[in-house]
Length: 392
Ligand SMILES: Cc1cc2nc3c(=O)[nH]c(=O)nc-3n(C[C@H](O)[C@H](O)[C@H](O)COP(=O)(O)OP(=O)(O)OC[C@H]3O[C@@H](n4cnc5c(N)ncnc54)[C@H](O)[C@@H]3O)c2cc1C
Image 1 (cartoon, helix red, strand yellow):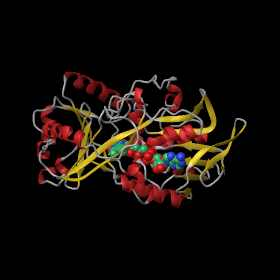
Image 2 (cartoon, rainbow, N blue to C red; image 1 turned 180 degrees about the vertical axis):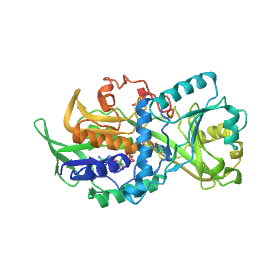
Image 3 (cartoon, rainbow, N blue to C red; image 1 turned 90 degrees about the vertical axis):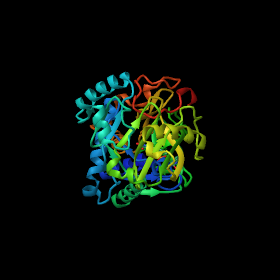
Image 4 (tube, rainbow, N blue to C red; image 1 turned 45 degrees about the horizontal axis):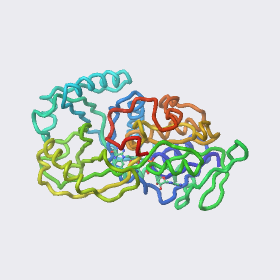
């Protein structure tokens, strides 16, 4: 094999597909079954309105990819463009939004500022008079995460990637400094390159490869309310109240909304935290009053991946500060729906040629972290309130 990709989530799968499409022979190792990690459990929010130029570029590329799927693949991830408002509640929010819009427009994204009255009229379910305005991009939207798993499964199988489910990666095989293959639960496999993904379990994958990857996993939860006429999809554009870490979009005639507790202890978590939901339900009712007292149709919690600066990792695995030849790490840092295709494609490009036109990967490698995991990059300010670095 030219390349072995570890992890059958959205990052590993789309990366394997891009590598295969470029002509490489590729095997994908998945410890469980395709999509069993974060990728099938996501809320599906897809936003190009990032807080840094790299975030914007990754979001824009991913949206173009989703839009081209029907003609390129004959199947799609269900991308629906509903527009996304980032509401401002303080004067500082307003200043930051104007700066962000200028940066986004420089990247080619047609984000705009929307005055408070216009935010209210475009969002009839939002409590009126609450915001000082919002930044907005009409092209943002959402995908259907289980359908994305279906789409990448079809892409893997039809493009000729060898898919090995229930096969875990357990280490690298090297001859001196040269990579010669991987160890797996199905025995050793030869290859020239390895791509390490793993979502919330990426740090453990890195450890098995003898490196330190600064990423973690933590509980994140989502609910879908009962249907209500006021929540008809055309009345509900997407919104993100960054301060409280609540975002929402239409789903099945009701509202899907997600939340992350910044005081959560990192680690695998699948139990729904009813107490935290109850606290955040009050904030949600302030924002979208029709949700007060509305029943729930679905609730779930799952482990989401994160990095200390909320930015992706694309670059070589490091061992004692030195790149491990032939081994590339890829993570969307908790943004696998909105950045996943672009991160995957950039990682595939790095394997094949050391660089990518999708994004400048120069600053996105593990070498941006010091020995305690502090990043030299400013964090993406538009992100969920993940646990502090000290927990990693
Ligand atoms: C509740 C929730 C809501 C979310 N909402 C959004 C959203 O709205 N928008 C957004 O952009 N992102 C969202 N995310 C984040 C997004 O889902 C993730 O960033 C993305 O799915 C990560 O993809 P991945 O391929 O890196 O990881 P995963 O999907 O977790 O896949 C990693 C795979 O690696 C496998 N694996 C692990 N160890 C090994 C090993 N040793 N050998 C072989 N295989 C291994 C695992 O079994 C797993 O299948 C959400 C996440 C959650 C949990």
